Length: 326
Image (cartoon, rainbow, N blue to C red; front, side):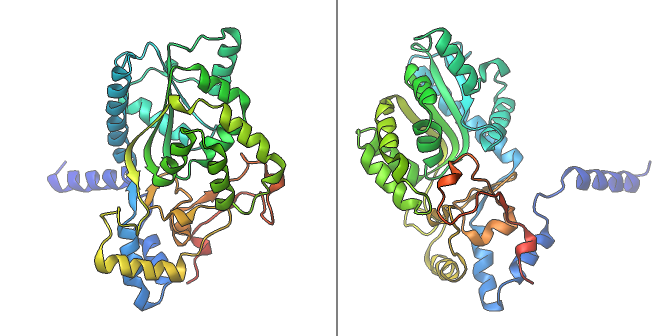
């Protein structure tokens, strides 16, 4: 085999093993939908999106693990062998499943340390008080408004609340957590449950809250929020906020004007958060809606009580490049 033949075969192998998640021609097609004067701003917007590839997530999971080990040890738990620590995630077949796998692979955490909530509920029923000297780690990739965790995962499930309350400490650990989550958890830890419920109702006007408002408030007040600590590799600030140092000056003005023209919100998504993180397997709904087709956003509302949506279809919606006009 000559050197030239080897190089050709290696290049073919590299291309096959390194297939891009988003090919260049797809990005170019996305850019072509805009008028010439808007393409500079559109490209500037793309440049500000933090894209988490598989290899990047491996590194970030190791960073998150180091943070967690430090906090566990400081709080009196076994941060080395995790003999008094359980790992879990929120929902089945959502991104928490994906990040749990990547996290376990990156940090060589034994599979037996990962338990779904059905198992934890069963174990608690068999041994009340059995978790009182243990820590629970709930993994996620991205936490935006915190609504799924606070309302759907906890407030609508008394079993989940009982499990959380039974642990001595609970860590909500994610790769990225948006400012909005911290803004909700702070009043919850002060016992201001109605305040957080009012914020939630304002953020999601397409849902009829009246039928369960009192039950949700009561449920929120049953959670021992003092046990909860949020850990993340990166805290996300809105893209155009002063706290986001990656967008400044002319770029901030350029992107702001662009989003004013094309960044229209989408029903029951959270694009108003002005998020700027995406993952190789999907895009959070906090991103500007104009990015959904490029990043193949899938909207699945099935975990919510969809019969109480107002003027919104519960069907799964997928944004793809077929939605982009040439």
